[in-house]
Image (cartoon, rainbow, N blue to C red; front, side, top):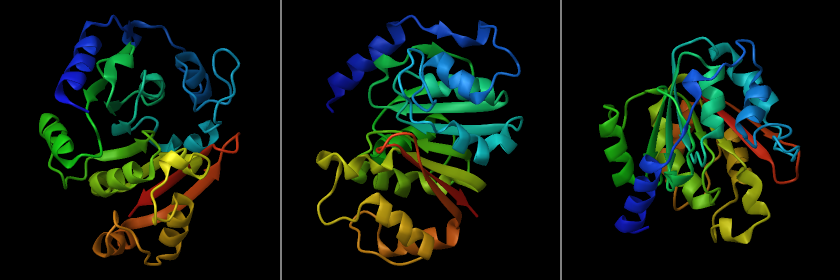
Length: 247
């Protein structure tokens, strides 16, 4: 994406009137599912207009409910309109949320707890600038949760994993949504690269595999750093999510 296109999208974001969720009255005991539905996230079982969602809520609760009242930092790669970020900001009342998206002109929510950055999260130069803006280093263990809900392209998933996994705190989670999309949409695949189903299997077994994105040294580091991997299918054949817990 060229500079002018990115600048235009950022300008539209700053000019756009947003919904201030900090002044909304939300029930203190609202469930995560209710919040996903309220703000229109496809992570829910059903969305506002009774459209089918992916049904990821129960998996998020299974792994993350212990963090509910803790002070945590969440990074979301691929935020679109901000529905999930809005829901998480309410469910995790002591969270700071950082949203990265190549097109932030779609973002429609505002909260003091949510910071939005328009950039390509698979480009090291862009990410380095982002780290500088939030005053951390590229190797600092800073995030408790990272959620990759971006392009779902295999090369983007692998590049983001390589860039961001080292910034996860001990016992934190790196979460990748919809990784099976590439099994159904050819344009998301990469020739001569194993699909992400296979990569998950290799990581679980600590088995070296051929990859031009994840080199041998990085794979070995992953084997040492990963505490647990749990992957699930959602409600549709293309719905899938994996939780990678760090040592």
